[in-house]
Amino acid sequence: MTEDKLFSKQLTGKTIISKTGKRFGEVDNLIFETRTGELIQLVLKSPTVHTSNLTLEKDKENNSLIPYSSVIAIGDFVVIAEEDIV
Image (cartoon, rainbow, N blue to C red):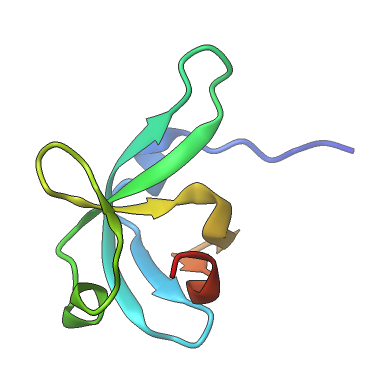
């Protein structure tokens, strides 16, 4: 079985939405484990009002972070399972 690989530049700028269609913002950057290359979190840019109601982890620059484990699909959008981040 082959695993599709994406480059970080292919994710940057994509809109993040929940599987119910709520918009969270866009992917600004990625945080990954340097030893393994495993993606850990997506850094959110242009967060929507919806994200302010959530208790998302923040980075040093106070950007909201979305755990990569919540991502369920990547295509035209990055689709996340909202219940995995609250």
